[in-house]
Amino acid sequence: MDSIEQAEKIMDGSEIRYKTIFENTGTATVLIEDDMTISMVNSELERISGIKKSQVEGRMKFPELIAEADRAKVMNNHRLRRKEGGSNPPRSYPCRVIVPNDEIKECILTVALIQGSRQSVASITDISKQKYLEREISRISEEERRQMGQVLHDDLGSHLAGVEAMSALLAGRLEKQGHADADLAREITGLVNQAIQKTRAMIQGLVPVNLANTGFMTAVQQYCREVEKAFGLTCRVLGRTQEIRFTNTAALTHLYYIIRESVHNAAKHGDAGNIYIRFEENPPDIVIEIEDDGKGMGKADPVRKGIGLVIMEHRADLIGARLKIVENPPGGILIRCRIEKKYLL
Image 1 (tube, rainbow, N blue to C red):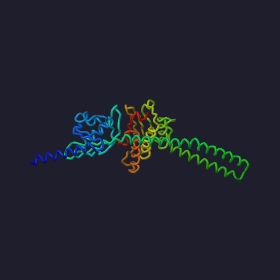
Image 2 (spheres, rainbow, N blue to C red):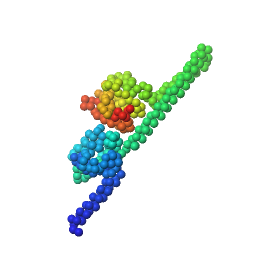
Image 3 (tube, rainbow, N blue to C red):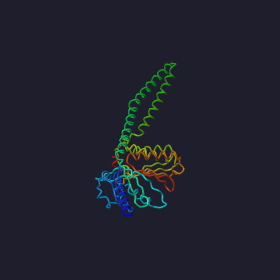
Image 4 (cartoon, rainbow, N blue to C red):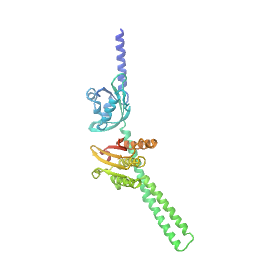
């Protein structure tokens, strides 16, 4: 056997090993060419997407597997990965993959260039079940908080109100009689009143807004009025909000907190004079924008800014929303939250 035959045998053996590894990685794996054509996939991709290898390899562009809302991001990262001297795109990031019947699976996409080539290899990890469980845990947690707040309001709150009324009546009678313990009775009434205020504060913390009874839009507008009064600025809700109706209380709670956190940060830390909350329908999405004319994120406390952003992104992730935060060139912040309408109904 000459050296050429030996080299070909080694290469053949390597190719077999690489194909075996590729096929048995445990996650859906895709080989992507420079023009985004899919040249090879493993069987796990068939399981995730429901599309056969024969329909994919050499026939489909990678963005065709990706949900429309994430395609631009995937294509931009593909270009940046091949651009010399450009900014490095994230190696791993959340991405939605299309499955039969136009349903969507939530996944983590991990991509890397193959050294010495313009090909890239991508692994797609299905996290749909994990995300479903996270949302269920969040929903159950919010429901338990609501129930606890309701019990405090209906049971303990009304009980304390009755005790306060009785102690006030007793104090009044003792005062008329000139009894020495009248002042003590008044003090007891004051202590009971303090207990009522603390109970109300606890209820407010557990159930800051009753979305089911008040209505989501009404709750947002009510918070805007509170912010205007507290900070002396303009905070307005814009858009054809009367035509938008939501019913998913668990998702609405997270969305309400995202809006609340955005507005609070703009008012307290951004020194904004005007804050606008816009609601728009852009089928299949609902788009919520919170825009302010403050000083932006550049001068904000980096610790506070980081924590607030992480919490907002986590809430958005729990309800399947996409959150984007950008600084406006004239000043201020624009926060855009996109969520498919089906997650709110």
